[in-house]
Image (cartoon, helix red, strand yellow):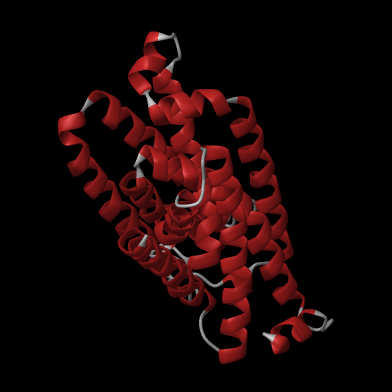
Length: 282
């Protein structure tokens, strides 16, 4: 870790500072939206959205490099497709529950297949591994400001609709009886999850996105008395995993995304074992 912190001050390594700042600022929506995802038990829906994102990334790369649309890149394509997938899944879960699993599986596969086809038709060499498994060291200054903009949007919407989100997550039927438009609130929650997943893809990649979205919140749930506490602990845990994961991966010359996930998984396992031992001996 000492080499990592020393490298942060090196003026020739700005990408390392962008990576660290992006990971820290992205931890805010990760922890907040991840808490809602865990409480509402919609991680499987979030997983489908995450894998659809590859279709948007492939579309963005194709539009940028093959068509010449410079303002529409991988991140913009990822946002568009993630939001579209969230709308489709929200409509399916509300109006066609008996076919929900089939639609989730179809979107999961079609999103990835479409993305790989677009990447295959994009001129030049494009390595899909950086999107599938993440490479936060590739974050640019533009990506960092894009993350900040999405942070502001996610936090503003959560602040405005916080009570409605709580109602939908804990007792949707009662909220509906009290006049809350649960359908629209659920759709908004999925859209916020979609935007958060787009941020996560840059950190740990599409394949491991669900782990970083749910593990910090699941760990935080063991020490929290309410969902607000859960969100705060989850944000801190997520930021800690990113910082430690970046430091360890830099010192050992390993991919940052997998290291971050392994550290989060080890902490989650230790918390579970600690809870079991506490029940047995106390």
